[in-house]
Image (cartoon, rainbow, N blue to C red; front, side, top):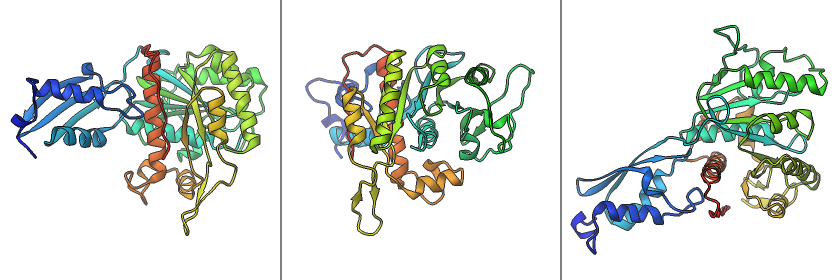
Length: 362
């Protein structure tokens, strides 16, 4: 490494040089670089540079950014970062509401919704999840909260349960898990509205709503009465699932709710013996559907037993005991997806209409 006096040429100060490099940094989450007003301080210390940044959306890019700056500056770089999600509350004290939907059941929508919530929380966001599947709530089981009941402190609102840093509310906490919810559409929609309105969510950066499959009353209630930021559609590459996913996308278009993108679940299977990729349910279906609607394909999640194990054991896949987060390929799929979603919401809500976000797949 060279001394700082050799780094900053052409009359530029160390701060100017770092700001310039940050503006040139590019990644999927930062399509136009890191803005100067996010940087709170730049200091020279022990022959290196200490950069402090407040990121306006849920993202943790310290390692790649540090590597980039160290290479460009040829000195040691320390990055101190924190996430302060920008935006005025859209609903109560919730800044962004993200609907996770699917055209049909069985495509892994609830698992994707939960792991997306874990991803956003791991990147510094304050996250909650609302289980909007009145007829088949999954969150109590996925979070290991069966038979748990929410409390109330004022006899007016319910306190959400918490697990792994996520606030959660579900009709499954209020009814017996062995009972069938036999309600007509309007009654189910009213119950969902009450769950949303009468839960003391507190301050949240992101509320993930696990929608029921299909395009019925509950979906219309959530899209028409809730100020949602956008929707994510989960599908598999299978032709039948894609046909139903297309109907879900068409519904969001009709109610003029932005489509944030698609997640293709069970995208492929990696053989543990030969390493060959096997496309069990078809290939490129999600990518073609996303391209047809001009939406990004946010993630291609493999068919993998680690996801099943975490779901059955109610474990956070990002900190699953058998895999450190940095070593789990499955965890990284969800982290990358959450970063991209948070980035898109930031750029869309802050009127960066000319920003083009390109999604790259490994």
